[in-house]
Image (cartoon, rainbow, N blue to C red; front, side, top):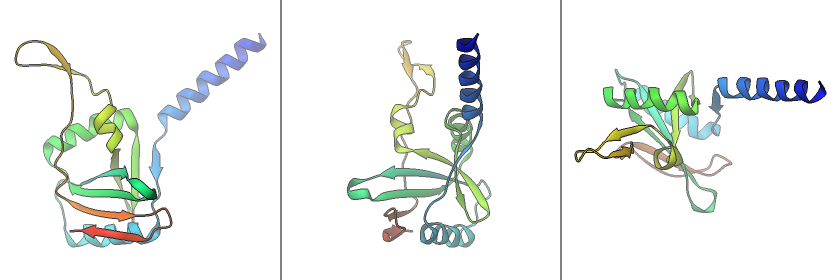
Length: 142
């Protein structure tokens, strides 16, 4: 009975953990800079974010306007990853570079009829900020 209770408790904890959203809180200088950018560049379709980790503890966050195609992609990825990033009063869907490389987004049929994994190739022609964990902005591009 004791093992049954422990197993049931463990399964309930896993279910609860997977149902919750993970919200990323970036350093204040980074979120303030992104908030200024978003307010200056209104988007009718919303924004998405991608976070990548580089060498030496430097992170890059890309912020870009979502197209209809992006919204379909993000709604699928959000169900899998359930991650967001808080920017001011907004919460944006967040993916990592690892999501785009390794996530199982399903299968599709190639032109020759063979099944293959869905892969995402994304042009990150967008606003980005490079920063360290303390929030020091080391580079940005608009």
